[in-house]
Length: 245
Image (cartoon, rainbow, N blue to C red; front, side, top):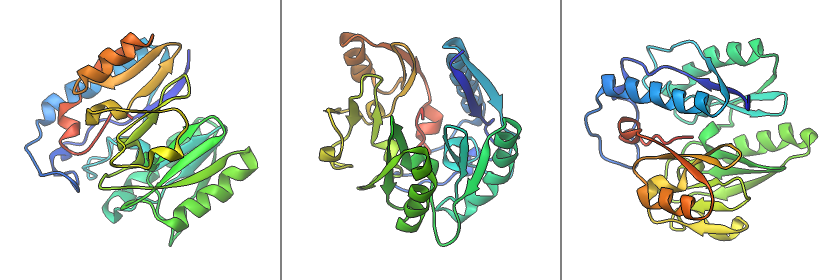
């Protein structure tokens, strides 16, 4: 087994989720639930243990669970989402990570931090400074992770919701990114991509890399350079600026 991954079932109010940088289009909640089940199945098939956080029916965006917590070694940093409407999502996740035996710490006011703005790569942690995460939140994260030997680097974001909407890391230490959204010079061995869905991937272990079906050219590139793309359709979540992370 690779480890444990937290997931949370889509709320019946998913279609009311926040959209910031794109226009709103109708979301098929039934299809989204089927896609989410297939997504969890792809993780399980790659050796990950799936742990379900309690559903949060009154929180439309609660399926995007990564925004609520950043886990580094045995420490779970409970986020303080930049969108006030999303802060109610954190409580259920806090109980779940404690049940896994993790220590917890919190981002406190005036700090804001979304987990989607935090990209961990070895002992370097990149934190996106944008609409959801502020300087105070990054400063608190830096202080919390320093005892674990992590260096936190702030990344100014362009017109994008989260850092990991614009850049993620491959298992070989290279970074897939959209250069118009993040400064490529902050990342070693950057590989620019053209498809928006191609810049957010999840290493699953060994050579397997999770990627959205909306990025077929990037998936073909990954295959060409020796990775095994695991393709999942997340079209309904992409309508809400969601991605595989």
